[in-house]
Every structure is written in C-alpha cells, then in structure tokens.
Length: 240
Image (cartoon, rainbow, N blue to C red; front, side, top):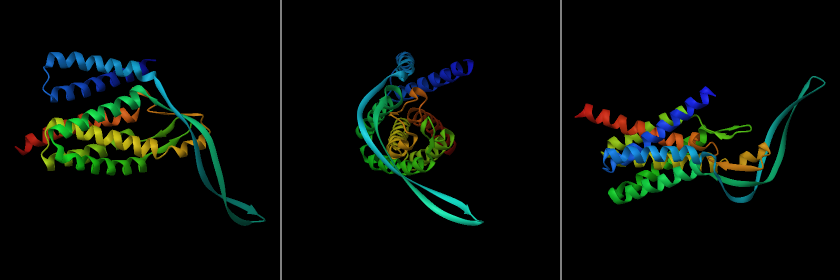
C-alpha cells in the first residue's frame, strides 16, 4: 500500500510538472499556472479508471512455433502453425490514451501557429520513434504490450534534444515537439501495430492506455518532454 501511494505521488508530481512547464511556456502568470497545473494533475489521476468503449473487432494472428522431437535418437524438426481468431472489445482509457492524444493535438496546433515549418520534422521524429518503440515493445501475459520506460525515454530525449539544438527551437516548441512525436509514436508503434499479437493471450477486451496515469502512452512523452526542455536549457547556457 505504501509503495502504491508513493508511486501515485510521483505520478502526480510528474503530471503537475508537465502541465506547469507547458503553461509557463505560453507565458501565463505563475500564480494561475500553479493552480491550473495542480487541478489538471488531480484530474489525470481521477480519470485513470475511466475506459471508453470504441467497438468490437475481429483479430486474427498466425503463430509459428518450431518444435524438435526426439524419435529413436533422431531429432525431427517441425514447424507448427497456429491460427488465432477472437472478437475483442476495443476501449480507450481517459487518462492513459485520450489525455495524451488531446495534449498532442494541442502541441501540434501550437507548433502550427508558432513555427509551422518544423511540422515535417515532427513527422520525421514520430516515424523514427514509431520504429524504435515497436522494436522495443514486448508482449506481457495478462498485461498486454509493454515497452521499457527508461530506454524509451533516453532514446526520445536524445532525438528531441538533437533536433531542438540543431533547429534552435525555444522551450515551448521543444516541449511540444517531444510530447507530440513521442505520444503519436507510442500509440502507433506499441499499441496499434501490436494489436493483433495480443489475441494470442485469449483476451476479450483490449484497453489502450489501460494503466491510466501510469501508462507508457502518457508517462514516456511527459517525462521525455520535461527532460528534453531542461537538457536543452543547460546545453544552451553552456554554449552561450
């Protein structure tokens, strides 16, 4: 129970810092920013248990398993093909999926208004991260699809920091680019591209962002954006 409370406290702090960073970047006063960030952080935790039904979908996956049989000291190699089919209910979690996608849309809109010419770079970063996240993703029985948090954040920070420094982006655009490219890449590379593989676990429903505020779809973009902005600040100060 203590560990859970501690974890929830850390999540609340990270969420508050993310909202505070973004709101501060658009030049809102600190007094207003603190209250709005705290409110949004609490809202994120509260809505973590809300799942929205999307539709039922027939999923099919072919599973190939090599089998080696010992017959009278002779090893016989065979390949067994299994066809898995199941109708699954697709749901999205309010805090773990809807919120990061909404925040990504706001980030993309911000980029389009402030610095439209880097939108192609956002697409490039999102495409690279999609491939990387997909390679890193693993199936976890009874949990769904997982991705290593620390490695994913490190990869995202390196790519986003390099992009920000090369293009001389300000804090607001660096934050928006990192969050949007990471969230979109996670949705596509981890959740959507692995959707059919989950049917092998004989599941009846698939919840995108099912871990709520603790889901990688929210946690990785949020942490990556925070770290990237602060790394860019430090490196920019050293160069100056």
